[in-house]
Length: 530
Ligand code: SGN
Ligand code: CA
Image (tube, rainbow, N blue to C red; front, side, top):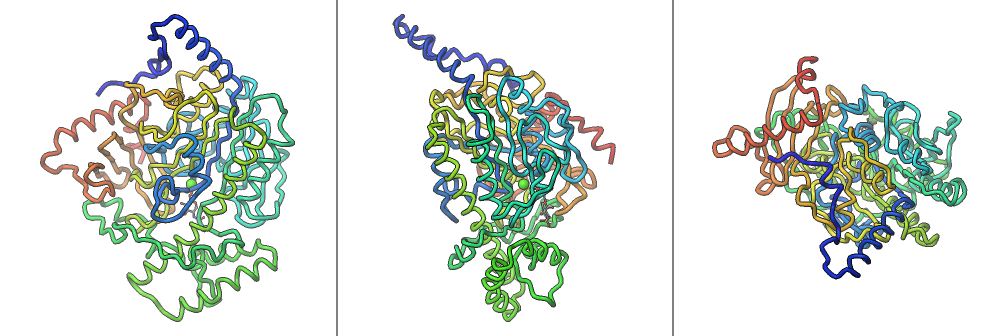
């Protein structure tokens, strides 16, 4: 396959072929103005945690409505082939900040890494170009943020109720309320009162929601309680031909904690996460805790009286999981709407790129699972919608393959800052201008490292093209998987080694090697180390 050239993407001729000279001049002037304006574009980057395309109605209408998120897509663009490079929080955030794959930015896993804040990052480059930069919410990179004029971050995963924040002077403060509302209030407060008006800015709004254990805002406790969510068709997957999939620990029936995840607390039921659950809900103000417990008590009584087993228990857990997750998304949708309204009221939308994405996708019962990590579609993909400032003309669906390493080059190019050669990502700006570059990338690289660890998803790397996916699970296992996404979108049939797939397998192996060489991912040493 052809190698993908970064430079070609940056030199689009625009409308230079127009023949009437006046029109040519008009086009040149317009594009010059566009470039000047580009120097001053603001960026509001909203990233949620574990929010997946299946739970966003502009991507998937089966489960819930997300009118405010859809509003971004309807007025702007929606990427339908949007992926991460490593489907887990810290690594995904590090890819986004650096524009580089995990092995190159050094933050390969939540459990073993500490982000090297002395390295080149997109916020630092924006800052050097005169942008004000701020981050509010989940950080999850262990070391203190660098490259931000203002930050206030959650300790680790943060709390849903009356959350703690770490301030720039290293104090821990508690902010009253529900986390998604609080982060939005703080973001609007920064926009309104804390930034230096007149300078362009890049604000990172990093929500905790919709991370496990999906604790809803109290006003939404009873929302979706009457709804029965459709079961994914591969809920009862038997993992035939997929060893790594058969050995994970993220199964709704087997691994979802009945107290912590499903809220079925009673004093005599002790689960591994009961104490954590009690501590989390114990953060509520006493009156709120009473209301919370009063809401759950009849559900708890009913649940234990039924003594459900097997499929009945699996489906009961699935419904509770879906309801809680959906409630958490409702607050997210409200708050994104609130932030959009603020930007609109202030007349800022015309000059601001608003991005909504997540740190990765998530399983909503597909393969019987919750959580992420796997290179399979539900968790390698991530929602990506953007409201575009004036001057960026794309609208509707964008179907090119894009990855979270592309955000850094995109924001830099939008700000008129040269994109460093060592970034792996490519700027999405040509796509946002409505162009369809013929030399756009034809494949994406992926590498997940966090094993052995919670949920026990094996280490793996692989390549995804528009139609196929080749994955190598390694470390304590050596298994290849091949999927034809057109005929098998749920990745149930591993075609690796099957007759008839020799040529495509060979092509994908070659493409995978090419990507590993291009990005200098030291696969062999990784394999040897363990
Ligand atoms: C916590 C969760 C896991 C989750 C990781 C990573 N367990 O450890 O279920 O996979 O975070 O999530 S919990 O008992 O603490 O809820 S990530 O999005 O931050 O990468
Ligand atoms: Ca996450």
